[in-house]
Structures are given as structure tokens and as C-alpha cells.
Image (cartoon, helix red, strand yellow):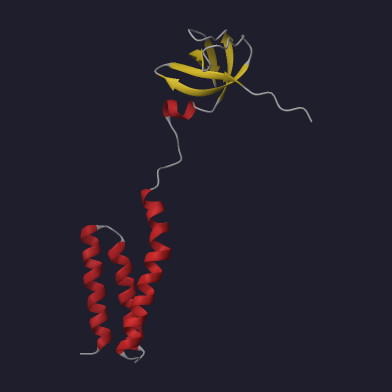
Length: 148
């Protein structure tokens, strides 16, 4: 039996095992086995086939695997619910201190407290939402730009 056929069998076995485990690692090795089969199909010796397998496997594991893992394991950047309110701009409707206050975030009115407990924020001030605790927004006045 020719060696390139053996490499195709190895690639098929690794591909099947990948379908059962879904780890993505065995797929990279299956691709390396396919490259060795291609080298064998060109009529090159077993040493070149093993070298092609090793180089392709090393390249796939060091270059492709980290990128694929980052895409597969990454969390979506879309924030929803109260998490989407953090970092938004709001307007103070009723003065905010460490105990109480009201702000308008987008089109909604929220109870609010000052993020800094020693700070009182007057009505009409533009603030940033730093956090949400329950149904209360913790806010802080926006920083004034530095003079030029």
C-alpha cells in the first residue's frame, strides 16, 4: 500500500475523532496528515512526508489554534440589560447624594446615588453611569475638559 493512502487514513481517523470530541485540536492534526499525504502523492519519500506532517502540525498549533480558540471562547461584546447602561451619559433630575436622587438615562428615569458618597450632584448636571446596584444607578459628574 502506498504511504499517501496511509496518511489519508490517518487524516480520516483524526477527522472522525474530531467530530466526536469537538476540541478543534485533532482537526489541525488531520490537516497536517493531509499535507503529508499530498507530499506522498508527489512521490517524495517517507522522510519528507514526516517532515511535512511535523512542520504543518507545528504551524497549525502555533498560529491557527490561538486565533481559533480566541474566536470560539471569546465572549460577545454586546451588552444588554442593565450592563448596557454602564458608561452611558445621564442627566440629573433630582439632586443626587449618597442616599437618593433621580436621573434620566436615555428615555428612562432611574433612582440614583452619587458614586462618591461625599459628593452632592445638583439637578441638570450631566453625569456618567459608573454602576448599577439593583434598580439604582451610581453616577458621577462628567469631568470638565482641560483648558487649552
